[in-house]
Length: 208
Image (tube, rainbow, N blue to C red):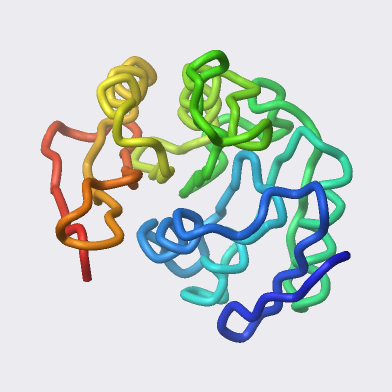
């Protein structure tokens, strides 16, 4: 049975079989840099929640999304429509993103990030279906020079993430660790890279 979640001025419909709204998505929606008039692409958009969250911060965005599951892509398109937002959601893999190279200012992703066979309790919806390398390569191809790539990822794979981002010319520039309390270790990280950016990483406070 579907349910509605209020996100600022917008309503997010959630349906069975689509990964539910989580704290990392909410945090990423607050974290990513966004500017008026930017073209934004969400890789693995799911219900379209990140597009709604970014639109609450800056209504004048061009919104695009990609998800490999057709039913999920339909839900994301429906969520844009129900809130009066224009945008296009496509079905396909990251490596087959149907957009021109260098056509976006911002790419975001809250990907399934547990490696298959790792034993992590994320369930099938949280297991990687495409490799991290494929995701970063796709983001780099879609971004203009100076464009930004923001995503969430598990802290234990931070080194892997930074290595792959740099491989595809996405320089990590902003980092935020997510922790429920000051005494608990971070459960995830948010990172934003700049295509062809200069080295220099800003580490933000865990708790706001």
